[in-house]
Length: 414
Ligand SMILES: [Ca+2]
Ligand SMILES: [Ca+2]
Ligand SMILES: [Ca+2]
Image (cartoon, rainbow, N blue to C red; front, side, top):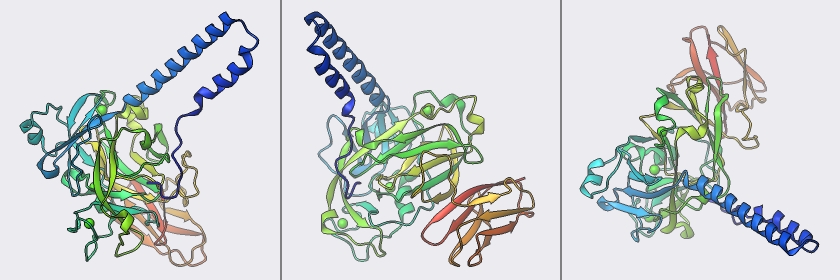
């Protein structure tokens, strides 16, 4: 949700080079050549447009069904006039012309005569995120707080992970976060099913619940050391078709209790959904065995009710960690502001960090999120050593936090 940004960039400029060229050349060439040139120009434009439309429709969700007031269906071509203003769960979505259920309530679809392919989708289990900034807002259906046209007292809980994982299977579309703080989220993935990659059935669903900006979140798979496997996918949600509208309060999450400004009370926003098969991430039979994590790099401007995954295609063990990416090159594979060495290690591991102020905490967690070791770096120090002899062999996450920022590094004990 852009707060102080201008109009998002559109894909405008590709015609311009042709125009410039034409102006220069046309004066000096024959009519026949000019016609031929124009014909070619039209042909090239048509081909470009066809390619653009094909790439857009390849990932297009055109309809959603939720359990709002029992049953609510809204299509891109015909937005439902009813605007949800409370919790409601995603029951189904239509992708490339086929309706897939999420497993929230298949019987509801059957009772309304909606044909569907049975699916099993769950929200990614986000347990922690970076600290909210002044643009971060919690979006809740306007009546979620019990006050249709105002704020409740006490205010709703200021709990970002809650609103990204609430509802049936975590798929509550009526709660979410606008301008989700910039950072990285890592998920440990298991049981990747090769035969379900490239089958055209979506494996990832991303919601967009407010005004989209052109800033792009980036999604990718990584190996045990955080190195990308396949390709990253930058997701521009501003080009997606609008599937419907909802009426929401956007509480300011930078203070607790949260506050609700009048301009953000009971205000209408668009709902969008992005979906893709994991083949879009370059995952295939030859590299699938290297996949250990799924990583999201958040731009700081996405507005998310939940990010869901196809539970038939892979399982997500836990949320590992989140670190802010401010000032970092998000195109890079580097994810650490802290550095562990040696890594892998078997006896001792040393973690280099910025000069400690005395307010930091260094924590080593298992991939299940269990705290294994913890230390407070000494004030003025730039590295902290851990004895890891007692840890079982495997992969761990070291996280440095000062209450505001978090930095994470993947460790391997061998
Ligand atoms: Ca309200
Ligand atoms: Ca939600
Ligand atoms: Ca698939």
